Image 1: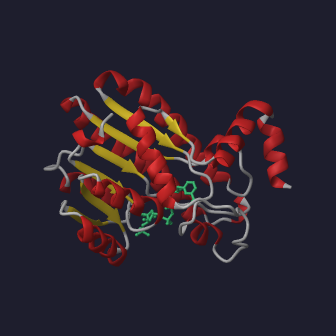
Image 2: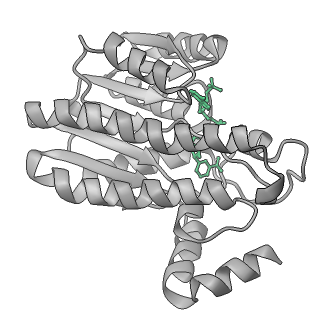
Length: 256
Ligand SMILES: NC(=O)c1ccc[n+]([C@@H]2O[C@H](COP(=O)([O-])OP(=O)(O)OC[C@H]3O[C@@H](n4cnc5c(N)ncnc54)[C@H](OP(=O)(O)O)[C@@H]3O)[C@@H](O)[C@H]2O)c1
């Protein structure tokens, strides 16, 4: 699937980290961008950066996508655009013992990581199928391939993203709509700050840079891959987790 055929990309969580790199890289490839996030100032900074090297249209849309009424408004506001490429990237994690996490935060995470991603996929997949062209890139995680104590609900939301994306990949192929699931491992973004709050940030070292993740993801998308796991270490963890040990064993070892 050639990115040159696309005119507009919608990138959720474009204000920081992996989503920011998607917005920058896709604008370098000549796509107009609709960049969504809550932090307007950070989105403006991304827009200013893009203006330095590209004259694509770069629209900023501020919204808290963990609230479904905002997702519905976004969809209505974008009805005049033909979105060719949807990057479902906005998401966050919560680290800690399940019983000690705030229930409201858990619910917000499920809304954003699962429900919003599903709603946007449904709306824009329909548009893409009508046109006979389009692409969706969903950001899952290595955490979605294994049971992960203390990243309990987060890992489960990403298992949803992984399985949902592959099912969608299989269903939409015949309509010339390509779906790619990207499962990054630890990446140098604001993710850990938010997930760990004040806890030990030194865990999960050896992080990749977000631009490496995005460059690999776009290459995988253009090659027509269904799943992309950036980095050899992450590929090994996922393979070992899936093929060599029972899930119960992995869960127990990861909790020790
Ligand atoms: N970094 C990693 O190690 C890692 C590993 C595997 C998977 N991932 C996944 O990669 C994706 C991107 O995360 P990141 O690592 O780039 O972290 P990040 O730097 O924290 O970026 C997260 C992005 O999501 C947006 N976002 C968060 N809550 C939102 C909300 N309620 N409404 C709208 N936008 C919201 C943030 O924008 P605002 O704050 O402006 O709203 C930000 O742009 C996530 O889905 C994450 O689960 C990350």
